[in-house]
Amino acid sequence: MATMEQKPAGVQAGAKTKVFKNFIGGEWVESRTGRTFENLNPADTREVVGIFQKSGKEDVDHAIETAKQAFKKWRLVPAPRRAEMLYKASELLIARKEEYARDMTREMGKVIKETRGDVQEAIDCGYYTAGEGRRLFGPTVPSELPNKFAMAIRQPLGVCAMITPWNFPMAIPSWKLFPALVAGNTAVIKPAQDTPLSTLNFVKTLHDAGIPAGVVNIVTGFGSDIGTPMVEHPAVRAVSLTGSTAVGRIVGQEAAKTFKHCSLELGGKNPMIVLDDANLDLALEGALWGAFGTTGQRCTATSRIIIQKGVYKKFVDELVVRAKKLKVGNGLDESVDMGPAVNSSQMETDLKYIKIGEDEGAKMLCGGHRLEGEGYNHGWFVAPTVFADVDPKMRIAQEEIFGPVVSIIPCDGLENAIEIANDIEYGLSSSIYTKDVNKAFTAMRDLYAGITYINAPTIGAEVHLPFGGTKATGNGHREGGIGAIDFYTEWKSVYVDYSDKLQRAQIDRPE
Ligand code: UN1
Image 1 (tube, protein in one colour):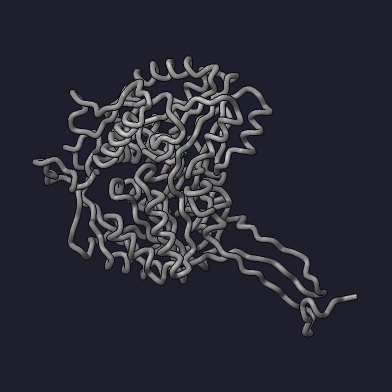
Image 2 (cartoon, rainbow, N blue to C red):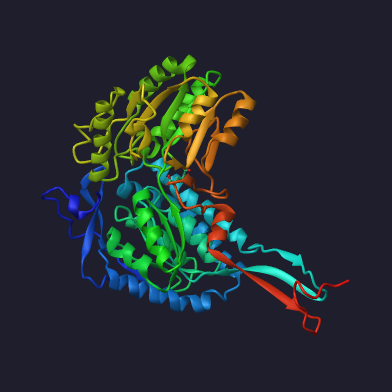
C-alpha cells in the first residue's frame, strides 16, 4: 500500500517533501487529528510523493457541516451558471493534463499514456456535464383536469458523500462530482488513501474554476476512519461509492438506516468471448489491452477469456508470446506497457490468486511471479500471468483478482460461451469477438451485464453512456450520462391549478 504502513525500513520523507492538506470551506486545513501519512510511489517506494492528512471523524463532521451551509446558496445558482464553472474546470484540466498525469503515475503506478487518459476522462465528463446545465430535462404533461398544468422538475439532494478508488483517481471523482454539482448538490469526497494527490488536484481545479467555497470539500485518510462517519452522518443525503463488493455491502446497509440515496459501483469478472470466426489478430490485441492495461486493475478488466475450441490453441499460444513481450516497469517511461501493482497488499493478492490457480490445476503459461532485479526491487511488480484450461468453476475464474492475471476458458460455441460468461457473481462488462452479426446481436441481448462490447475488449467506457453493472456489481444505479443526473437529483411533481376552483383529481371528471 502506498502509505507509511508499508514503508520499507529506513525510508524517510525528505525535508522538501510536500505536505498536502484537506480542503474544507475553501481553505487548505490540517486534520484535527494532528496525524499524517506518507504516499509512496508503487514503482519505487523510496520516493515519497507527498505527506497527507490522516483525518478522522471530526474532520468529516466539519466538512459535512460546511457543505450543508454551502448548499443553501449553491442550490439557487442557476444550473447553466453552475455548468459554466464545470466547463471552465475542463479547460483548466487541459492546460494541466501533463502535470496531473505525471503526479498520477507517481502515486498510482499506471503508465503515463493511461494517466493522461484518466485526466482526459475527467475533461470529457466536465464538457458533457456542462451541457446538462442547460437541459436537466423533466416532463411536462397534460393534466386530466381543465386549466391545470402538470410537470416534474429535478431537485438537488443536498450534501453528497463520495468514496472513490485508487485505480481512476481523477476520472471516477469527476463522474461523481460533476453531475452532483451541476444539479446543485454540495459534496464531501474521500479519495483512496493510495491516490489522494490526483483527487486533490481535481478539487483544486474545481476551486480555480470558480466553484464557491464549501461546495466541494475533500478529506484524506484511511478507509473506515473517514468512510464510516461520512456514511453515518445525518446531514448526508446521498452516498456514492466505487470500491469492492465487500465494502459496498457494508456501505449499502449503513446508508439504508438513514434512507440515504446510495449508488454502489463494485466488482467485476469480465468475460471476453472469442468465437471461431473472429478476427484473431484483433481479438489478441484486445485481450492484451483488456487484461494487462492498468495492470489489470480496472473493475472492467478482461479477466476471463472464453474461447471457442476451433481457435483455442492458436489464440492461447499467441497470447502468451505477446504477454511475455510486454515491458513492465516505471510508468513514467513512455516505452513501458505495464506498471506495478498499486501497493504491497494488492501485489500479495495477485500472488495469492496465482498460487490458488496453480493449486486448482489450471495451466500457468507465463508470469506467475513477482519481478525482481534492476528497476524492480523497490516496487510492487508482478509479471503478466496467463492461465489456460481454466474450469469456469475455479476460484480464478469466479473471483475478482484486480491484477495482471487472466483466465482462459475453452467453450463449444456461442450458447455455451454465454452460459459461462453469465455464470458469475458479477455483471459489469462483457465482450464478444465475432464477424457474424447474428451472433453479435444474440450476445448483445443475452450477456447479463451493464456493458457489452462487440469486437473490442471489456474496457474503454465513454463518459456519456451509463456505467455500472448487474448483480453484485452494484445496486442498480448508473454513473455516466443521464444515469448520473438521475442519481444526483430527485423528482418533484408540480401541479398548477389556474381554474380558480377546487378540482378533485379522479372525482371531478370533465365531460
Ligand atoms: C473502473 O475500472 O473502475 O471503461 C473504471 C473503462 C474506464 C473506466 C474504468 N473508462 O475501462
